[in-house]
Image (cartoon, rainbow, N blue to C red):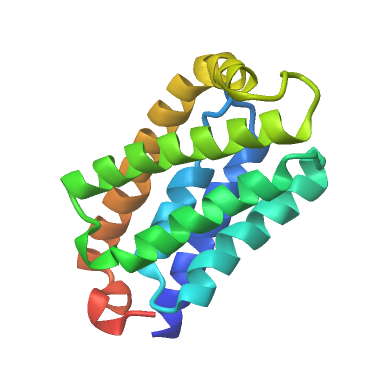
Length: 172
């Protein structure tokens, strides 16, 4: 059981830390890591805390910003939703969940930019401007989340068949 916990922990931390490597805007494994953590950790506290702690540690290197509460909150809610629906997160459902988490992240973080900066006017028009400005990044978010979700969930499914200690019967 501890082997499974440590393996999930390592996968999530490595996935989040991949954001330290050069990449196109919003093409990271953080969303997939939050989805994966929620799906694989048995304890909700681990499902939420592990990706957020890894995100915080990587932000120590990359720097902090004024919309972190929205970024962290969006990823935390993705992990909670994945944990809640974890018995259904396999195959095609992973792709659907990945797409939904990308869209959720987009709406939450762009609303956060609108609410906490002076980039856009108050009111619905300003919010729509914030969403419009974020559209160029949404494509990378969706493709990156789909790619990394396929890698994380696919590699894990294969590992579970090859390494008995990772099998679902020893859930975390």
